Image (cartoon, rainbow, N blue to C red):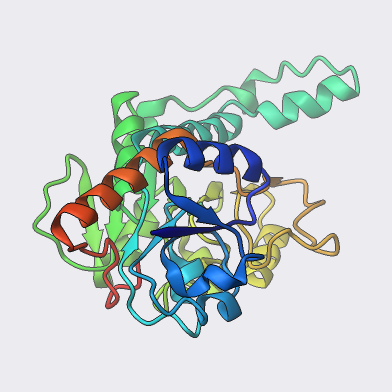
Length: 312
Ligand code: GLV
């Protein structure tokens, strides 16, 4: 039994230590140990190069180090090996905290105060800077899967109006209004703030484009904590330039790290963070992987967490 570990995460050493601790007595290899490639049954990965995947002829399960699985599905050699993805309530809480921080930053005009502090200006303009109350703001959650639904419920608890959008009709019960399919326009028109938690699939690339943005309110905030490719960044920059009360908080980008030449970096209405909205919780992630591994050992079966038709 051999496990391959490959990651581009910067906390790699912490991962190795924890994998060794939880996957006791199991051989853990890195991509340098080529001679064991044909023994690898499990791979714990983030951004595994395709040329490595190609060589893992005995692979039974791929564990994603994050909630997203696009880094696996996009590999040309990926051939339906079952994928275990993370569904971690602590990651969901991290994401909800991040989203709330960006909503509050916008709602309470915090960046304006920060800028005026830097200039030692006492900015007490109550006419324009009095915050809008939570119950008067409708937050539209674009993508209400495991993470999106958690964020929606979290925001609803603190009095925001919450609505959600889902591509397909569903029997699942939500305790907030859900728009589906062609009702996307109603969803956009009704939202004061839109939080995108869309995965990267063939349906979501450039989903937030010129047309989408033109339907959003002029005084509004767009938060993206899903995947960068779901936004057409050129269209977003144009939209920001034309609408001085339109803001964006972006944690994910078309290309990461964001190129220093991107106009987004210096736009006064844009907040940028480096893909940290929902950092994986190492210990619980590996515990989830280990329990799925044990289940597989007992039953010889594993059900993939990914629906290939949906692409996530
Ligand atoms: C982060 O983007 C993740 O997929 O967990």
